[in-house]
Length: 268
Length: 281
Image (cartoon, rainbow over all chains, first blue to last red; front, side, top):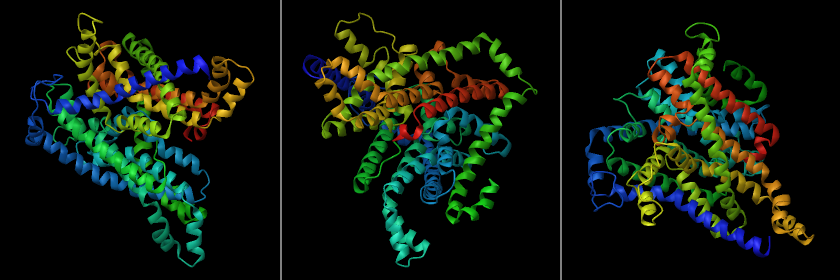
């Protein structure tokens, strides 16, 4: 486009970009500001600043125990998802398996199927197994939900990696196990770590499955937030939200750093 | 999946690496979902009574209609707002692109719950948006921006814009700028060149993004529950109600089957017209 049409489009585009950027970022900024509020309700702008909501957050057993549950679920489920997902991605990309693309698509199902269906299904099946309200039940659910992130990230890492490097190692006499350990694994490590980070964030944020299979005694942060958001809302929830946001921010920076080192692409 | 273990040696040792992930998928996902869907035909007794009840109950039909209406409203707005952003990403400077990718990705990786909660603060009666509107003299009274359709739309757009921006950007990045120049050199007016040359080339990304947004909205739970009112109840909330309040697993299964079938058909159509591989690239 040249002349007036181009100019008009440029201006329109610029305006929309700025407005949408504001729209995407503003809520996050406002939550962080409110978390430091001195007022006891969600007033914006806050009348004064304080750290009372962070103090409240770490002093309230409901929040601290939910943080502990989240970590107890996040660490094993992200680790398991990373192990299983990396193995599966390696088989899918390097294994020359018939129907690999179908199997790959099947492994993506847990993030395509609406969360409510997965949650209701797990809750229903868990009833007979006594897994509702247990860490084991939560961990299994979270492995299912986070597995696709690892498979996608590691597969894309493997695709950008030159298979001749592994071939060279084998040609030079490395056994398959040694070639994997000494050549593939170090090259793939950034992609695996990215997958682990994505899985950790996805586990921490997971709400619907946790909502169904947790109980008041075993309740991760997301569910605790959910029950608070719908009841009496005070800025404590803004404090935990800001911590979640800081966590995602750090992970995104770390992931960007890993990506720059290897040129791999994430699941998005 | 016992036969994966049996077949594996024929395919090669590497296939064995798939077994643990496939086992988890089958036992903790496919199995349970199949169990839930089967309830639709077996509870309270064998037959299609759940689907008949679904068809006859005005309340259920209203929820299905809400779900389709909200998805159909959110999708075009997402495309209209996402298009300029994707275009700026594809044709702007690398610096601008990095900023835009960061701005779009950051909320994407922040929990849905946190963002929806933030939207509540932003749009509440005495929230900053109403304060700005009053200060600008656009309204005398604070507007009701949440617990209604406006709230659901605002929350959904927040969450779904990246789903349309990234596929659109991928399609635009592949377009050779020479096409537009050729059209202009050959005498096409800019607007005409845009509509006849550029727009058709972005269609795969546009359709992919729109389908992803539509399907994601269909299954929405958190956004309508927090930002909508009783008139914006969507199918996912109805499924939860059936289980948590009534223990009606038959109806929950029927609603899940319906939701899954509609999403599945749309995915299949997308796959057949554009191809998921091409869409993902």
